[in-house]
Image 1 (cartoon, rainbow, N blue to C red):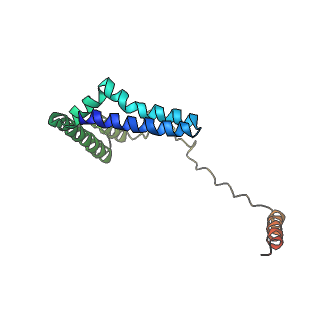
Image 2: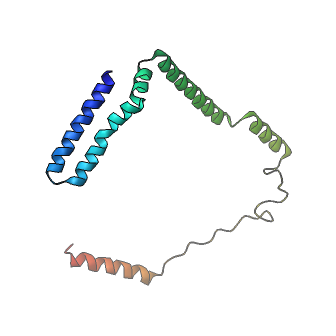
Image 3: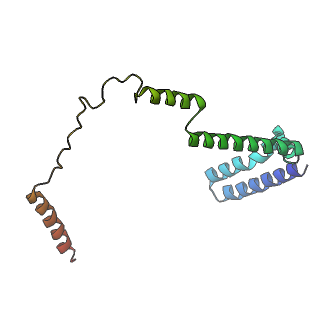
Length: 148
């Protein structure tokens, strides 16, 4: 009963503000304010406010929310422990079997890098000296232009 009264008062105040806004020739803003102010009355008429009030003051509903929170905590902790241990039992069993066979990948018969040779490191490209000088001369010119 109180929730419905509060929603009605909020809607009435919003409609009053919309009228004042329309009086100031701001019709789009007034229409938007009127739309927002009709929402609480609409929620009361649909019964949603009564349902929310019944849920908020129901010990059974709060117990249900508590159980939902507890189940979420249990899911989160089991996932964390599972990640730290290295996966599920099936995943660990498959990892042990692959380790015992000696192959890193089950279907691999040849080394991934070819004939066992390591790739040679490519020398880093060096920019020509004249290119670097041009860059610095441009920067110096900009700094001199600004008096720095």
